[in-house]
Amino acid sequence: MGFCNRRRNPYGDNGGLARGTASDQNVHKSGDSIASLVEQQALEWLCELFELPKSFKGVMPTGATGCNFLGACIARQFVGQQQGIDVAKQGVYGLEIEFFSTTPHASMIKSLGMAGLGQQNVTLVDSIVNSEAMDVNALARQLDNSNSKGKVVIASAGTVTTTDFDDLTAIAKLCTQHNAWLHVDAAFGLFERVVTGVNGKTKGIELADSITVDCHKWLNVPYDCGVFLTRHLDLLEQSFDVPAPYLANFSSEPDFMSLGIENSRRFRALPVWLSLLAYGKQGIKQWVSSNINLSKQLANWIDDSIDYELVHPCQMNVILFRPSAGNLSQQQIDEKTKKLLQAINKDGRIYLSPGHWQGNEIIRVALSNWQTDENDIKIAIQVLQELK
Ligand SMILES: Cc1ncc(COP(=O)(O)O)c(C=O)c1O
Image (tube, rainbow, N blue to C red; front, side, top):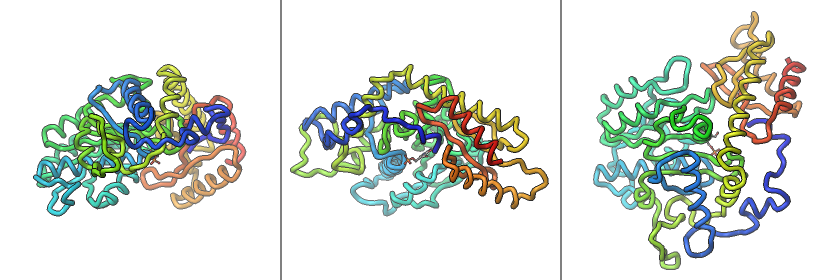
């Protein structure tokens, strides 16, 4: 959600072709066309962009929800392997599995349900005070106390409200000690690594067993493009491969249809490949940094304003605010916040989303569009001044 109203087509007049739609290739197995090689190369380039080890391989599902579902399935397969159960073939009967997380995205919870593991099968780990990030000492205690034979930690690199990052190095160490699978939801947070490098907020993500990232977020390709990366491609293939004579694979590499949900798959890699080729690391770094700087600019204006309250420091590309409380009760300020959001979105010049922080209604501004510039911030400030 953000300032998307001025979006032009970054793929020029031939947008349909560049989006991979007009070419109408089925990227399910290698050898049919060049499309599989393009997806392979786009995945390799993404690993280079994010400075991830070459041992990470993957596939492009529909989005971060699709990736988190793959994360649930591969973790399930790993845990099953430890317990002598091939889950993909035999099912989950008798499987012991416990998930640990602090602020899992709603799509992760949905994925646990879809994978037959239970939306409620998550042991919630305390967060650090005033943060959505995991308290690593609390995780250590909970892993020690767990009797489950199968443990999976779901960490976050960029939570959806406060954009907090878990301490992935410390969490990975605990996972190794407890033989736990580590899945990291970095749907938009992995792009932060392009700005601050391997020692920034995502430090340690290279130790994860699997990673979710979205290209239709901060890479700005058209919707329907997630990226699932793992260091254990064999387990992903075990989770999703089903042989069929008419789909025989004559290559030594697993086909993409054996690494995810869909057999037939659209050519979603093409816009990723083109964007990486056209903009390169510097171009992407430029727009991600610009979104972050502009977010801080708007957050500073809100913080200085007597009409609004910044409810959490802006750490990346999300700004959380509400009208100043004055003498209003909590219920009244929640009502005022909801009405203000409706008025802003009805006005139509900018589009903001709702949210909750520490049990209270807030308004959430998220910047991720490559074209957002100073003028959009001016428009946002003007709207906030008019509708206060
Ligand atoms: C951290 C995180 N994970 C997962 C998702 C789900 O992404 P998608 O809508 O691409 O499935 C989002 C979307 O906002 C997100 O921010």
